[in-house]
Amino acid sequence: MAAAVSPSWNPLRCGGTALPVNLLVMAKAIAIALLLTNHVALLPDPFLPFVPGLDSIQPVLFQRTLQVVFVASALALLFNRSVRLAAFILGMTIIVSVLASKAYYGNNKTFCGFILFLTGLYQPGREPWMIRLQLALVYFGAGSNKLLDADWQSGVFFQNWAANRLHQPVFIAVSSYLPPLLLAKAISWITIATELGLSGVFLVRRLFPLGIWGNLLLHSGMLFFTGSTFTMFFYAMTASMLAFASWPASPMLVIFDGDCGFCALSKRWVERFDLENILDWRPYQSGAGKRYGITDADASQRIYLINGDRIYSGFSAFKMMVLCNPISYLLTYTVLAAPGAGDSRFRNVVVAILLFLFSPFFRPVGDALYAWVARNRRSLVSNSNCSLE
Image 1 (tube, helix red, strand yellow):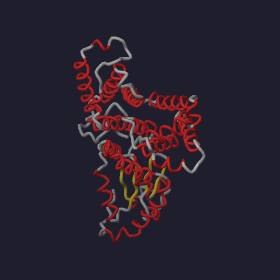
Image 2 (tube, helix red, strand yellow):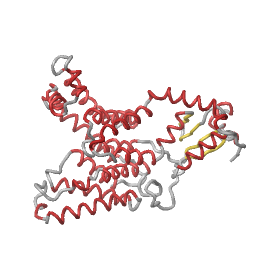
Image 3 (cartoon, helix red, strand yellow):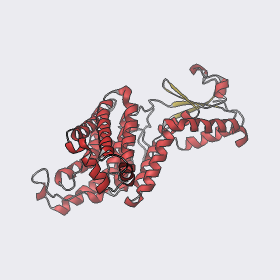
Image 4 (spheres, one colour):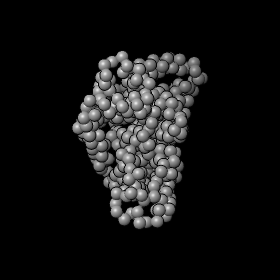
């Protein structure tokens, strides 16, 4: 996709920087979650450090310096200023915080720090394999750790965690009808298999879509089950899937009915949010669809989107417009991260709705809704004259 001449100060823009759009959106989503969850308040002073000597630094000076650098680098990333350096520094503030305090350490914080750190090390024009390998390593380590733990194998750990610590009502109710530990053991082994499976899936390009869905379902399931994002784990793990996304290399061609007033209105509405100019709209009356085997009869019935060698139509075309627009992700993480700890039900509902809308299960519903609108589009808005481009 053609980059802008220079980076924009608009935080909703992601083109024209030293990072590919998908990696910058990933880093921005994590930065948004860090800022909105007030993670800056968690940055520690040096206490029981992993690296000897850090605790000799004046505690208040150390903590305030980290906090200032943290906020400054996060804002620089959001406003497209030296984005690789900003991501690197933001990640390093978290890594230094981990090294400075065993009390601050957490798997989720360490992962978040390294994802940003590796984003800063990204070399333009290359595949982000360091980030992808980080994901594979995290899943392999998590799955192996559980596999070698006797309490995970037997289900004892999960039973105690779900029933005695979380007091998870659905788990308690269902397990009461089953033999002792059966449900806990089943969930334990499903988790182990999923994590080890994902560690391999993320090493094979053609399996990336499967890995993305596996990641989203696993971490959404944890969110629904516990009501917790585990500080930054949910945000960072789901946002990191953008490193595996196939982002458009050039503007995607949209074939639409130029004589339809409703279609023209839809085009204008979508273009307002297309800040990166990822869509190139052409009326089928101009003959733009013929080279792709799209007949006028077909194009008069539904919209078409061409992304490289892939052709999408109808509801699927509109879904791709949403998925390839950076604003979709930036607004989603803003909505998810904004609520406080007491708003987990709201967050769960939003995540569940998004999963369903973009899952294969919703496609028949989406296709039916699109077909109804397409049949009635000329009565929804008065027709306009054909505007050949």
